[in-house]
Length: 139
Image 1 (cartoon, rainbow, N blue to C red):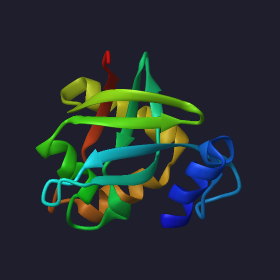
Image 2 (cartoon, one colour; image 1 turned 90 degrees about the horizontal axis):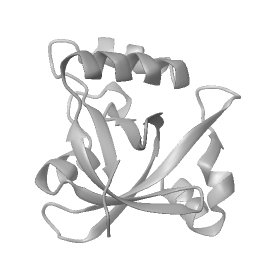
Image 3 (tube, helix red, strand yellow; image 1 turned 90 degrees about the vertical axis):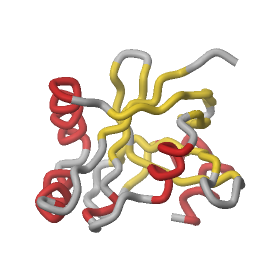
């Protein structure tokens, strides 16, 4: 992960379309910067994303482990964050998708990374994997 974050700083276009270990097709990746809920420091991670109109969609799967990823916990503590998508930067506000919207966005994200369904199966009965919508905000 650290190497991908560093690549985003050096070559955002290359980091944006990244070949993951899951297969040869490049996946769209964004750089998410949150505020650490304990440290108050800037925390960065690279995540596969999709689009929903002007918003960006990410999945808090953490590869199907039992606990939510730290970046998601940070967003629950402070939903305002920054993202970089290629060379473009946005201030965003995060929210969890619910109900029919969540199901539709989950299906959309499966077209980008089908392994999300494997992660869902591995967390059944433990946690529901959040579908996070990052909506651009002014300023």
